Length: 366
Image (cartoon, rainbow, N blue to C red; front, side, top):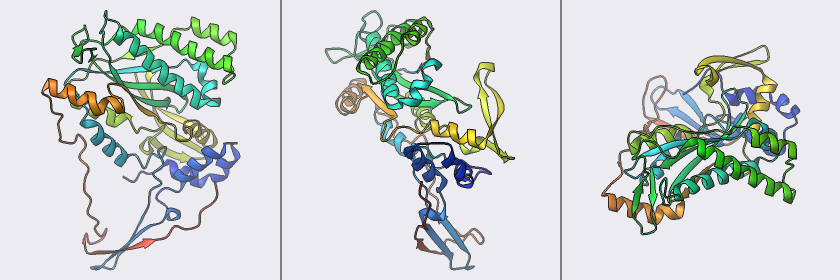
């Protein structure tokens, strides 16, 4: 779909501003890719109609994982791969957040901090799953990293999908004691999560990997950390539908940008502190680009990770065994039906077209 405004055009039209902000080379390369998405600089195809002689140009996408114009097909492909690993059990949506006091560390040491976030979250779930009072089995987790808030500020957090049970030592499936009503007590999880997270940061500080002063440690120990768990999904298929919305989500989508004028960008955002009211955020183009660049992940950083029985090793052996015991076959019908679009002429709608490849034009250096 073609939106009135998009992120790529904002970057392309204000490239001198992008270069003047003081971004590093990695950020500039990604923003440069996004600014060239669906333009002649990436090449494309010329479609010539044999009926009315109309010409239409289709330019290639950048396929950048931070580009709001390139996520649709990735979502479809990812969902198809995950669908075969579903179990006939309750699934829960658990969110692990980080206090805002750690935002500065995330900006300067993103790879280290985001790795700690994954590690502490999974360790917390492991502890509760292993406790016979709650489960007494090996569970699993699929976690997706988001680093932004609705207003493009720093807000690193994990969206996790956790099955309501686990595999015992004798290879049998065991459901949580809550009988599917809830996973684990979130207040207790938050306390354990805080302890594990801060212990990891202290270890990193002792090795010199990060600067973690004592006054910051004290304030974080005194602060209430948040772990949030939603009610279980109605059916396993709802898990896939949910994941389709979250796995390849980026900091801002094109449809949220409503106007660009007088050197400012206006976009919609939800204020969750006030009952998710939809409001209009007004940022200068410079500030908009700066905030966008904050959410570009480190090189080759994996933002979707699987743990326990849902890990790559676990899925290949454990999941088929559990499905067999449950006599459960995941729905083979795709949740998202990808439309097969047959190219046709924009004027006469004829499908009698001849295509000619277009070579990429010379582009600027990032």
